[in-house]
Length: 500
Image (cartoon, rainbow, N blue to C red):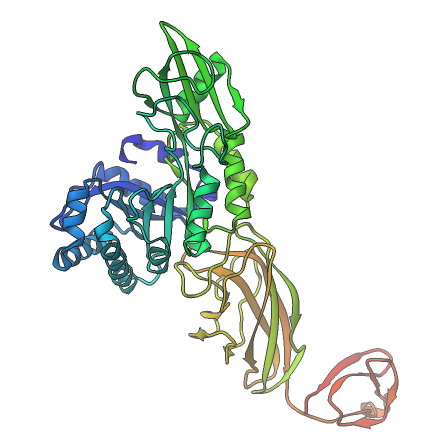
């Protein structure tokens, strides 16, 4: 959010993929309010881009009347889309996130239509831009079509918090992990299951977790005490410091933490720490969701333990890959076409969406990094699941399906031998387009030769005969059978490859 100042300088960009800057007002006539603290947005975007992280703008409206008026007017929706496109261009952003927190049930379908039109327009502007929408932990009024919204966006940011809010009648966990008879039905696990049961694509779901909590005045210091007034929202850094002073308590039913103090009356503060957040990240992984998000970055100030929980859950290498099987010729004839089969394992902790998603994952040839000494020299074609070749240093083979962590996939395509003999390099690596190359590269030299006949010969000037052997060491007098042979005079050996 704009009010955290320059804390963006402390972010662990290596653990992030996208940041949504909060926020501009989206009015009922489709116009936008001014960008708050625009210099922060500019500096944040520059720093994020230097670290391979995308930045979106969040557009908000929290008035049900205004949201309904907005969504009921096709012309107003079009005006808003055009204004958002201009804002993205003017600030060199990577997309937009919509935050309508209280639309009425009557505009449920209109919200899907708006998001579909916005998705199309933003992706036409730039295919790698991202369009997301914030959605509630509980759809109290039936206003959100989770399945429909997931289908017409790049993701739903589930606001998985505020189960116990400022005005609640008793103090309790802001984001309980699981449901219980003690704390009630609603929890992060209940919410995730609700979205999945309503047909939302799991890979489009982003579970938001709280970096804030509430301090309530209470009747007593006992757990689940009645409140005597509204709670005050506090950021994580403030609560972590106070918990050291007053004693942090682990609440095992909700899997969250709290502390209490009695200074002129009882107060209870409930929040999430690194241990409870780690369990929420495990929920993301175990439910095969698209990812996790936080409200809000910067609320931990210069503390590092929440980054540690994120790193522990998802790993430093959020994206990683290894090649587990490769079928590829060692030799090819001039202009010969050969089919290669490559099996890759998703050895990271992020889901790889297919080429129909924002920032698709593909096998690529290009400037693949990782200290690789060679560039790809062979053209690709005839892709099994689609792909393209814009020259040997700009090629992609599409995956054709979503690949989950610890899963393998196999793809195939053709490579074409060049028109002259020599050693040529096949180079490939996994890439999240628009973000980064990752994993170890696949590097293999292929010798391109002209078809021919191999035979033993006498050496020049009466030198000893050069004898011909196959790869098993058997003497061969003369052959035109395809294979690899070695010709030697006892001092010098040459390799001969015969391609039919």
